[in-house]
Length: 241
Image (cartoon, rainbow, N blue to C red; front, side, top):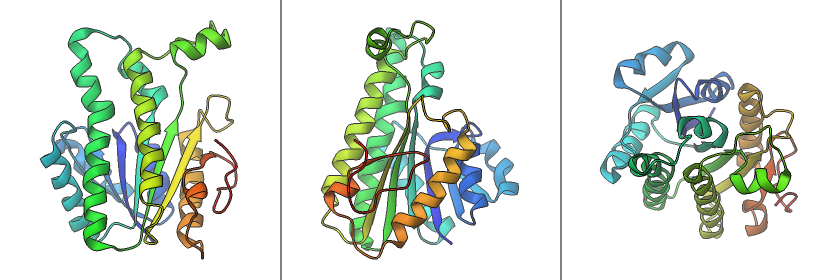
């Protein structure tokens, strides 16, 4: 089975997705909040380490450590849980902006950039997934007239758009490389799986396998399609945008 690097929601907060990956037979390397907690996930067959998201050097070290522990990386999952982040970064306080940007934007950009360099060096088959669990911005709530929902802060909403842009640009940039498969997946609030990360994780596992096992290389259109979590994954023609 595949060796999978899981980045975006630190353990134990991202444990349900990580466990779904592990329970599917994958060997999983994830990021945890502190090195003291790393051993806590061995029972779930998950290897974990810490990561300084604001450091390119730390990011590269994380990738090298993941490669060493897993022997090789077959899959990478970048997870942006806007619902979780909306509660983590509730206020747009000036003194918190730098930290929130590092956590929600800088880290992902470093990780994607360093990963792409490693992939180009090895040119071994790999599947890269960008998974988004959506959450409404102030703009969304205003125009949807959903007064019962507390909207995400400006930094969370901006970071979400940065994640979307990064994912779409990545899928386009690597479209001519037959050793890279891409899966873009979005789970909106109206989705029946939205409140159950285990089910989101189970769907992700099946979809990663489907994309990786496809006989023909993806078209740009297929790679850049945002698939709806819970639906049949797109391997040829765009279904959701």
